[in-house]
Image (cartoon, rainbow over all chains, first blue to last red; front, side):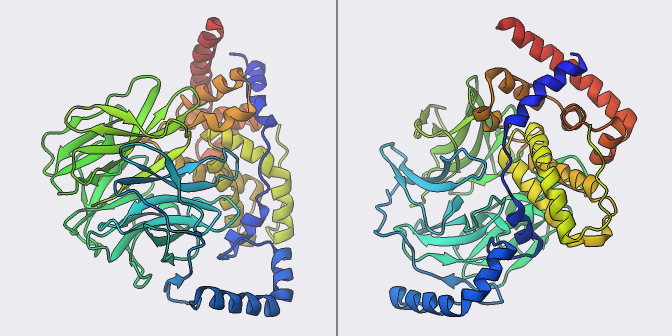
Length: 362
Length: 162
């Protein structure tokens, strides 16, 4: 291929229009909790005394709660804007969907019964983008990552909300966190901060935020073991290295060990803790016993399938919901596989950008 | 060919000026590199935010911000390495032939892909590409030669099928 030919073929990218991200640059540079331009903040300062007081008072009357700004990562309790209780299916699989397909991605939380049926839209709780849902172990609430900013970022704040859409609680602040995972007793969340520079554990009420690993970087996809003793995650093997591996660590940051599997993670324990599911080679789902034995594939991925990923177990451990990336447009859709038979069924044929499924525990 | 912008003081107005002059080309290059507009937008924003925070400590902000943005984007790609890339993110604004180019690019190694994009799309010399991706001009030459060979094989095969 000649140079000029290659230049011509790449020139199509000049037709793409980049978003104006300068306000987002300023917000990040100054560590602001909300997206705002300098000009915008000036206007806000001028108007803030009266408007904030009025807004604050109205919120107190409306919701009957007091918004608390705090400096110790304590949660900010706020009413859910969801106007009516969500009729969450008992066997709901909650997931995120990006219907915007725009540069400024806007993900929304959705739910579908594991048996199929209509898809229920759960968002918005905090606007503007909500993703990464994960059910609490008792199935009564779920955590998710919310980005109230109008700009695209790869992290957000972690929130917890009841299954019926009520009782929204902000657990973290700073728009820097993602990929939450519950401790089995429902009292803690593990997550990564700042695009994976550290692995963090926090009380679910927002207190006691503590970094448990930060030495190697690119910490990703933490999942808590059912007995509560381990957190599995992916990270670099050494600082600056190309490779990454799956590790386990105790919640207090001790006893870190590399797992002997080839996977990009996540490593997901079955409800009874006896099996682990994970995406492995060649882009299919695998399971193995917790002791590492009996590893075998449970999906097959042939075109138009490109990759199977993001497994989540059914409460009885007989099925796994997962995301299948499909060629011919790169759509990602929600599927369920029967662990014993390998039979697969799709649940979201009408959606194109589904991710992060989480199956409601019983 | 890219003209080296002379920005000696990374204060806010100069950084904003640099952003205005560079962010379109940088973002488009990152879209070609990642196949994902969101990763590209995030990498651009984060790189310029880091530039603002570092202030005068950065001597050549134009080159620094390209290096930072490509490293951030490469890091995010690594995180998603278990997942195939999503070329459809750029398919909306592209012709089928262009989508094939984007898909073919994603079949290259990260170094081959960044070298091809930075040289043939962004217009950097081999030496400048090497500075951005943290390599040598000789290594960049190898990346580009092998990358072109791969693209030629894939795209000519596609063209023959049309």
